[in-house]
Length: 332
Image (cartoon, rainbow, N blue to C red; front, top):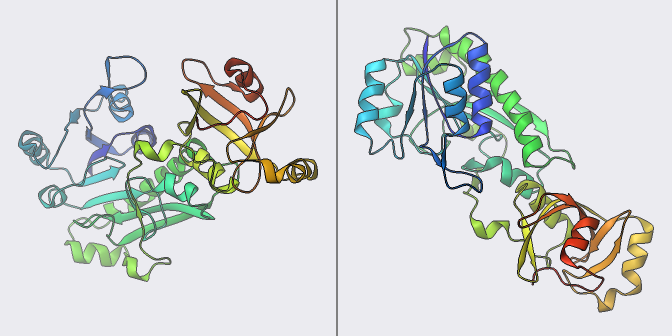
């Protein structure tokens, strides 16, 4: 069974590596073009391209498969049996979806029909969802609307951030894809309708949850609004890890890890001066617990942060780097 793998980020590269290690014949990889990544000005390949090169798999890059006739022609000539798509970053047109003999299959990082779209892991954390998961679905022209053949859930822990949850979901996805590929292999020779019937594909209208859409994250999403409630701010910091940020004296500070102050001492500390506090105000700084900051309802203890141009550090060290003091205001 000849497979073409489509994907771009690190999350997808783990799937590619595990499929290959499982012994499946990945004959080509399609990914996004090399881009500027990090602080340097040079172009860097996508994590999927790096993995493909390491695995000695031919790689094709395309900025828009819909407009890229050359790549379309190459893919046609490969005569693949299956396309596997994991976080590729582009919507595939019908002519691509109809190319592989045994279908085009997507591993999507949500419990469909919840969080269809580009950033399901981020929004599941930001939205403070109890659980998320992986669905393996047959692809169609709609946005993540195809019938599902495999599904597995995982609870979102209070300590989960984007990196932790992405790693766990990548492992779930890899395992489900290997399982799905074996099932798909047994449908050789069937037409699409018969294949889906044999695979017991479930229409999404029969799955739990209402359709929702995980739009792409935009630069404005990363800015922390200290006027929001503490829990909501924590979920943004975790869901957009490691890039949620605030300003102080015109300098950008990434907030990498923070927790709500819900112990008795912390609450009493707030209650003593609650009428005088404003959102974003520093209410305490000490070497042991670091920086505490007020939100719309409860204080937050910042554990780790990163001042622009500096390395990540604990929040007490951050306070020294930035000359923070009690009554300083974040967001300025």
